[in-house]
Length: 177
Image 1 (cartoon, rainbow, N blue to C red):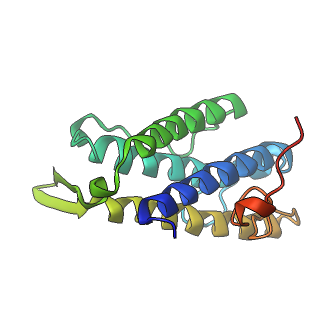
Image 2 (image 1 turned 90 degrees about the vertical axis):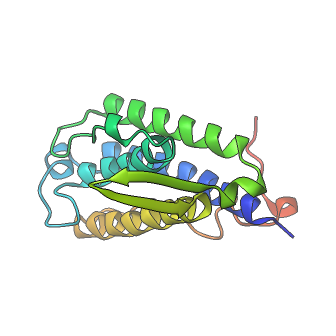
């Protein structure tokens, strides 16, 4: 049976894989004017929603985790990010997240993360922050799916049938090299 940490790591690998597919679809399937158009969603545009997810990881797993919120500067919403800028930011965030996860032990999940924000002291177990970010990304991916469908574009929906995830390892399809 997988440990809790192994399950968390698998979800982060899945989200990393899916995030790259969505980034590619945003820049190859969605016309430029639609990519930046205000849509009345959780954040103004499709690209803003994607950037918000990256910024969530930055906030919680870089600045909050290290108790360095005073150094945190949000990624700008409303900026017309190019593909290369978006890919660079995704790579930077993903690299940090995966490096952090690789170093974690099961006992680290109980680590109390505490920071002072706006005069309040916030305290969470690391496991709750990690699980919150899985939920956060999945929530916004569902939102992106709805926006893709409004544009009559099939989103790169992930599935339990994806051969790279969630199937027992002996039935996974390994990529041809």
